[in-house]
Image 1 (cartoon, helix red, strand yellow):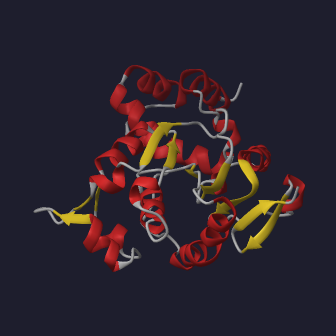
Image 2 (cartoon, rainbow, N blue to C red):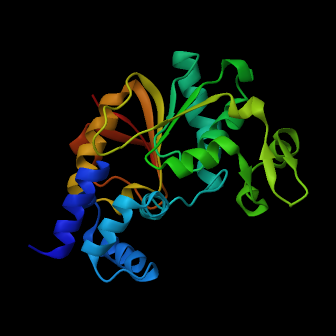
Length: 258
């Protein structure tokens, strides 16, 4: 059996993360760089390393789940969300269930809370954020960010909800953090949330095979309320969304078609 195939089977048994559902060429290249960087001779040797060394294991999960984020990433899309999508949802539903399904290190779910504060009192905002990486969840919980990640965030939010520390880093306020509930979640195998009015899954789908994406689109469809909205990343427009009973309402935004 191919050594890489053996490796991904072993990883699945250890972590529940099915690397076979990620694009092979991309994923194999990333893992090979970890093998070389940590001076292991091959995939077998590296697997023993991550199995027995918590630090190596954490590095492995963090590296594979590609935690790159920023506040208000693709700001034009956030403008559509604020000016069109959210007002329409509020008009129909009032209070909203919102799920940041690949919440990474917190920039996206915290952006959601701040944006929703234009419509609700903070105490009435609740965002669920999920991610597979414990390290990302820990960073989100700490809520400390570099100045670069705040570039696109409206300035009034920076001044109102962040404090700059002596190291030039920005700490987000507890009143924003308290509105996000984080939990560990595997998009490829865990049971999806139900009755969601707004779901974000951005800049994650590009790493998965077409088979994996098809399954995820179907499950996201089932997670939405009847007029709920699914918001995807700027390189992740859904080809033939009607196959998944979804219809575009704006670029990168989809509703159930039935």
